Amino acid sequence: MENIKLLIKELCGYKDEMPWLEFKHNNYNPEMIGKDISALANSATLCEKDYAYMLWGIDDKSHEIVGTDYNLQTLKKGNQELENWLRSLLSVNADFEFHNVELDNKNVGVLIIYKATNQTVMFEKVDYIRVGSYTKKLSEHPALQGKLWDRLRNSKFEDGIAKSDLNISDALDFIAFSDYFSLKGEKIPTDADSIMHYMIQESIIVKQDNGLYSITNLGAILFAKKLVDFPKTSRKSIRVIQYDGDTKLEILKEYPGVKGYAVGFEGLIQFLDGILPSKEVIRGAVRKTETSFPVIALREAIANALIHQDFSLTGTGPVIEIFKSKIEITNPGIPLVDIQRIIDNPPKSRNEKIASLMRRLKFCEEAGSGWDRIALSCELQQLPIPKINLYSENTKVTLYSEIPFSSISPEDKLWSCYIHACIKQMSGDGLTNSSLRERFALKDTSSASISRLIKDALEKNLIKPIDPTTAPRYMKYIPFWA
Image 1 (tube, helix red, strand yellow):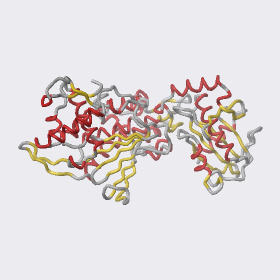
Image 2 (cartoon, helix red, strand yellow; image 1 turned 120 degrees about the vertical axis):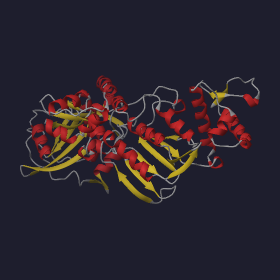
Image 3 (tube, helix red, strand yellow; image 1 turned 60 degrees about the vertical axis):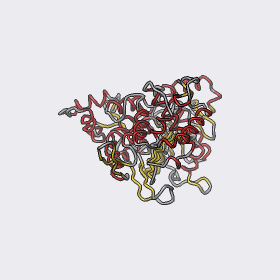
Image 4 (cartoon, rainbow, N blue to C red; image 1 turned 30 degrees about the vertical axis):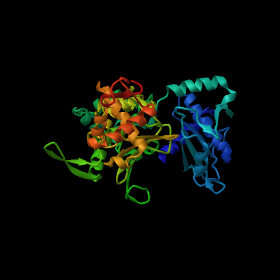
């Protein structure tokens, strides 16, 4: 709370209210607060500030501390807590924190509001802006609206600040910098200034104008020793939930993530490998143990979920749910590429700095090859291709363990057939009845079933024949886009 007290004194030092700063005494009207959160968040972005603030218990003229009669953290709107009520009516990219402190023997309420990212913050589907000391609808001020959207288009989550006003020692205490050098295969420098040089070069830490240091969201999300030390990014920690059977009726265990993604990734994969069922298989003359889910596919799918998530969606993060015969990996946001072109199209990421650093540290493959490896590893174990489900604000990838061909849903059979054609096309070949039987580990007697599957894929315009005049037994197929 000492930092909050210092913040209050610093903000009270301003002569006037700013577009990102507002003082109140006892006015706790919920609708007013909702509109002001929208206006202040948007104004913070417009003014290139990381945060905006509302303070209660401050005289709005003299900025003297006069105290307030209420506690933000206990206020309600009807029977609902004020914070929950506000979040239900604000856009999903709105984020804020309530604090209540005693200063000079007087009660002061502090609302810290994170700047708008990716899109404007709205309250009841209307976006607001501060004009002087007034909250106005953004649509009424087209010049400010245009300038704000320019700022939003150029703002990136990675560049945001997760923790500020730190000296060198404190900044390095929060970050697992030794893991950074270890992952790069380099020796750790012997002095703090040299370590800080690399942290700044990677934008993990930035130097402030006052000579102190800030840890960026990039630094926190990848290299935090404890994500809980960073309130905003802590909500993006990975959760692992293990269920009994193939439904969500009974949870066996839940494992909350603690470390940053880069620091904890290998440990996460090893942990999952340890709790997932395995089996002995004979391939050729070699007997070996395989997990029910290909580790390569699991690794790439998790890396994709972490790298490509939409960080502007607050209050949600990546979730790995383990069932008896499937694993579901859910992340906030939807892909920026058409999922039917996920094999051949160049990838796009909202978070280029995170993607670049994760690739350089060898957590995932070079751009564009991740889904190739997922598909190939599943085909080698003759498993269905992972399914991609898109929702309004989330993407879910489902990996399956071994399922008899007869038990695979028609939709998943078509998806596996289509991806098989993509893999063949990328290697300069085409899908055939024989190659698809081999892909599903079926005998020659299943030729008719595979022919029906190919016919369905043709009717759905997922594949097309290379040469329609070829005799049926020699026919080869390629994806619709080839």
